[in-house]
Image (cartoon, rainbow, N blue to C red; front, side, top):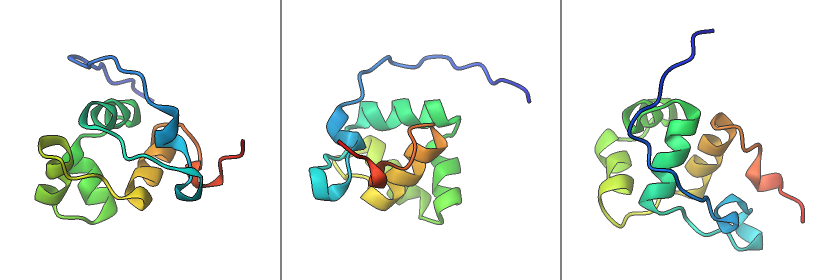
Length: 91
């Protein structure tokens, strides 16, 4: 499998609250965290929108405005990025 080089990625610390189940206090990721996890998953926002069958403009709004990514979509992105099934997180 070919590895893809990643450039212009802003390092960030992903808050623990972003990886919790909703029932345990999930907090939606900010724009920097979303961009970081997209990069870890090897996807652009357009590719993620296609994967999840959501409008690309709606998906872009998560990075360009204060709209928050829905939990279900975020949890799939976390699986793609290697964080596992965050809805099954145990303390």
